[in-house]
Length: 424
Image 1 (cartoon, rainbow, N blue to C red):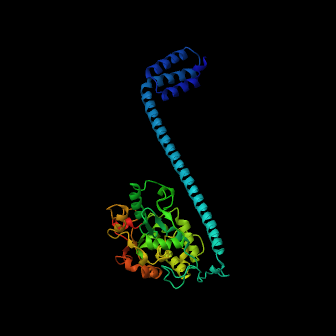
Image 2: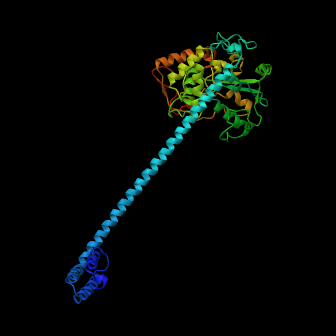
Image 3: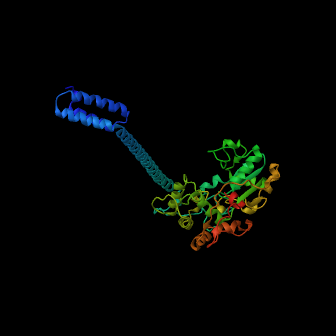
């Protein structure tokens, strides 16, 4: 008997027909031919198997429909499983991407922590190397009278810094020879707006650059030598008597809260500079004598650190964004000696300069800044009052309005106001 007509093979053919999605007629004809061959052969088992094949063939039309349904179901199951597999793979990809992102973030955090620690150690070493009169054997700071400094300008405090504030070089003196103008302003007093205004008048366009050197770097090549940096005290004194001198100021309390928002605050609500925040926070904590590493500070933590720094008579070492205004533009020359002292938010704040620059524009261009307000607590207001006392004593009469920083109310500015956009 041919092998394909063995009973077991015929049974397989029956099953194949049942599962087939082929043409029903062809399957029936093939099965009938096999049955006839089996009938002519010997063996009851073969005959029974052939009969079964014929029976299956006779119902092959129905079986074919069933097979198509089964195939459709199988295809649907395959598509579902395939989709599930793709989703699982996608989920795995997302998980791996998240793991990689978390790893990179941790690596960056560890790197910043290491950089902070190294910076802290170097800063402490530099401070320890200063004049022996600056620190005692126990590391505490002393402020003896420094020869050649004396009680100049804004030194209205009882103790005179032993050296000029290191950050003073970033503030005073900037002189424009062709205009015979000295310009000065504290950080967070609106100097961005002032310098943009000056650049427009000098070059006929707004500041077009991105990245370093920034607009505040007045002696960089981008300013094309329009502004000179005067370091000699004799020349400074001469220019204060012969040039037109212009100084920007700001309400001291509002300035410190603004500086905290811009440089030290946690989170992103105030558009804080997260690149400089870690090391600026570390510098404040180091000067205040606070141990440990911290990435940012709450407003109260910031003010307590400043209070500790002022109490220890180390405030002349502060970054220019936190340096008291009496130790900046007015460190060597009283406000009365300046041609004009004004806040950038005042109406026609640049009118005194407009004639010197050949323009009728008397307002500074608006600058972007945080419009998010801060709720000041009573303890925070007390700290601010204590920290800024000498500033108000010196420049209070030049401020056109009372401070807007008071406990129990939201400070600083109403969203969209000119003050909010200019005081940067």
